[in-house]
Length: 139
Image 1 (tube, rainbow, N blue to C red):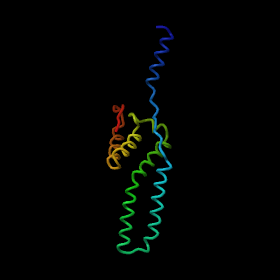
Image 2: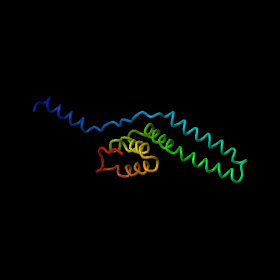
Image 3: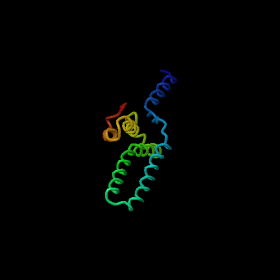
Image 4: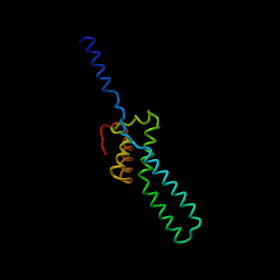
């Protein structure tokens, strides 16, 4: 084998050993952030009026707030995942052995299956993210 062939073989092996960069789809932070801020504003307004309500009115307000928070859980979780993907140290984010990464898997699972099943699938994936596991695993 000539030196050129050895160098070429070495470069091909080296390229195959490098980890793939995690390619994240576009995420509209403004839309999700707007949902979360709207939730917080409505909660503050309702809590300001809660002191004037008594009995049935207060109960209805509490039920309304509880249902409103439940309806925004998906947006809050997606926002937290986005912030992790954006600002967590690269050493932590690129340590995942799977493709797509565990955070991306959880994001896709929440969108595809809903909050409860998506979070359960995401945490199950994080639990198994260690050697000898790894590879391509779509939700």
